[in-house]
Length: 459
Image 1 (cartoon, one colour):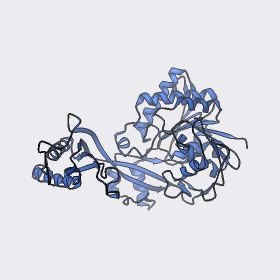
Image 2: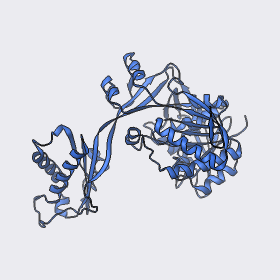
Image 3: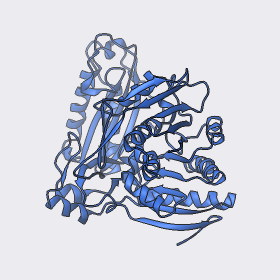
Image 4: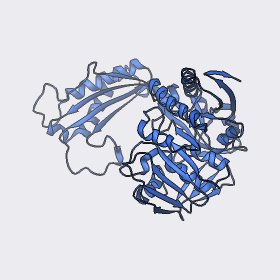
């Protein structure tokens, strides 16, 4: 089979495609262009709130680049996890911008829209049939959790993209998707080896992350019968055997296995060989189909409203006992509010950056004291008013707390912003993070085809 060229435009569309590298990629005449647009790395908020994590202007900028390039070359453009979280409102906002770009640049194409929303009745039926299990160390799913979910999506694999291409799509915009599926679907659809296609996809999904020194520049994968080649489109970045092999650890618990819908990628026999200083050749990767096809369902529930306050503690006496101070301030806050605000209606947490703000209880390096500590008072309340009240009390008593050995008594927290207590909007948490067995890889992902003529969409 002839060489198939896959151009990955960026690590996440909507955050600014690097123009020079992307232009080099387009000049190399790829057979298709792919771009992932979302992730669960951004947390549950965007799925719950129905908002995009990227700003509309940046989405417009990036969509214009990839859409014009795809139409100029006459090659498919494949976009997954539209609008960050990939549910209906995210997909609709992405499509609105896409149509606007098409109108502005007078572009016409056949569009496939793949939705990923999951209904509560569907998931309840699967739960009752015993076809739902946790994805990782999460609690078992219950009907109550499903009922409380604000919004749920399924993370599609390759098959919906392949079906869309089968239907003649020149542009595919999909809801929540597995990152690698965005890039693996077209080569597998064309008959290339699934193991090599999936491994190539797993590397290029993050653009030039798999290079030295690494970046978000566009990257090209050259797929052949028995190997593929990785090359960054930034001439200063090097895809070395070390950097490409190391990317197998990216978001994976096992460097020799990648589990995807419908199977697993076996990397135990993969070989990474340098072609030159900037390119690496990969071979030996194998795809093993699974007897049971599963799709991960992501759902969120609203837990309240968040209000935060930010401050810095510089006194070395306070820094040395900051965890104890925060615990005591928390107890004091609870005692002050007792009888006025039900403890069940709020959650107060102090995040101490400089001590264990990133790792929490998992932090092990506690030998040296920092010079200063940033303390974020984080309150989630049943209502915004409750959250504001709790945050106000906690922040005030942290500022004026008489800790052991205190010297200055006029306040020991430097607060950089006024107002001191900052509303952060509704708070959500993942309540559904489970695998569901499906009878058909397409059953959760309906496809709609539209003829777009200079921005006007026709069914």
